[in-house]
Amino acid sequence: MSSHAPLLIWSVAALTTAGVLFRPFRLPEAFWAAAGALLLCVTGLMTLPDALAAVLRGYDVYLFLAGMMLISELARKTGLFDHVAALAVRRARGSAPRLFLMVYGFGTLVTAFMSNDATAVVLTPAVLAATRAARVRHPLPYLYACAFIANAASFVLPISNPANLVIFGTRMPPLAGWLASFALPSLAAVLATLAALWWTQRAALAEPIEHDVPVPPLSPQARLTALGIVLTGLILLVASLRGNDLGWPTCAAGVATLLLVCATRRELLVPALREVSWGVLPMVAGLFVLVAALEQTVVIGQLADAVAAASRDGGALALLGVGAVVALAGNIANNLPAGLIAASALAGGHASHAVTGAVLIGIDLGPNLSVTGSLATLLWLTALRREGHMVSAGQFLRVGAVVMPAAMLPALALLLL
Image (cartoon, rainbow, N blue to C red):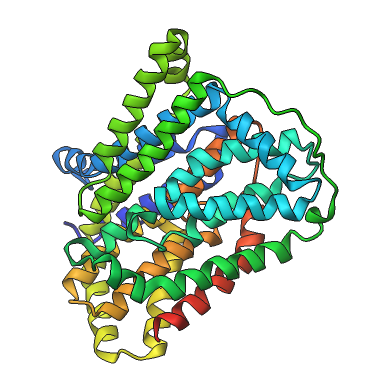
């Protein structure tokens, strides 16, 4: 590699991130991620075989997302989201704070047991349906709840975020050990995020909302889809406890649910497949190529040295510094690439359990600062744009600048205990 290659690779990565963030010319995020990967190959900064190997490296993520998106589209097409949304609005009884707490609580459960990406893909359309049913004038507090809890609750369990499996790898602690380390930090993160989000959205949450809304009947296809969602959650939990990959089980569950539902109503098959946001997959593939290119630079060795130094130090400031640096890196380059790079650095630096935990919290909570912080947030944005809602990078940053530090500092502090 030439002396200028690392600088050029980082430049391409920065431009790609900017493209994903700002979407120049209204081109989708997938275009810019794929364009960045292609530019690396065209300029010779990365060979085509290495790029293809990097794309294949993410196969488990693609399968996981495909399964989740199939189930989400079925829930939308069969009216399951509309039914659940109407029930939630009626239970809120005209109280915006009560509806907000219901969304936040349900989002916590979905994230904990089905992953943060599932919250973005499955919960966001349901919340959009609920805000429409309740004739909410300012839906952003409820939509923000979906995005922020997807990251805040993403280390309640190992399966709550696929990045958790990447960070720990073969050193994943048993469930009891995980809860001993992360139960209090994750509880603090969930509650602090709720408090900060409530404070930033308090004006919008003071408005009255509709409550006497009709509940659309639950069709047989919607019931089958609901069953598919429940079974998918159980399958993910079992797969995680057994240490298996999550992609194949999720994709198989999604395909099985699709076939089962469409066996009772065949005309759903083509629209469901056509309207899935498949562009998410090339976007993720492009990010994997960027990660592989960044790994060719000296960054891994330097990070490994920093991890080793923090592990030897073991002090509070060292752990806070590790968590903060990883959080910022995740917002610059997305936490999927940052997590993969951090995992290599942790292995190379023989990280202590405390340092690994600080990195995990930085990777999971840090993305609540900006819209490019995590794949879950990008999926959330995709779901909103599909329904005609736009949230700018500046809007999200203004809220994230309050919410992210409010949750991350107490979580890191409790990790030290």
